[in-house]
Length: 123
Image (cartoon, rainbow, N blue to C red):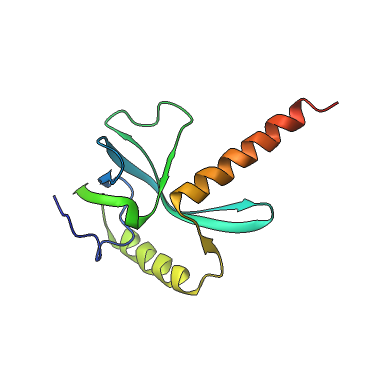
């Protein structure tokens, strides 16, 4: 288990980690997810699902590199993954897209869901 994440940016899909606020293992299922909320694009480092259960509900975990407490397993890396990681690092350094904390991202999703639910019941 690797406890030092400072050099572990852009983990591969399939990596299994522990988050600081959970005792369950989490598997990374996407990276650098960009969403638009109220016309503003924002991003989060990773999305994940519980491991070994997988994605069994619509609840996807969102988190950033700094939320990871331990790396249990690194996902498959080939030349395509290495090239993608380089491009993502370049994009992140140049992007004008704001990175949100997991709490901010969750709040935006909740607000968006409430707006959609409210529209269903408007006459």
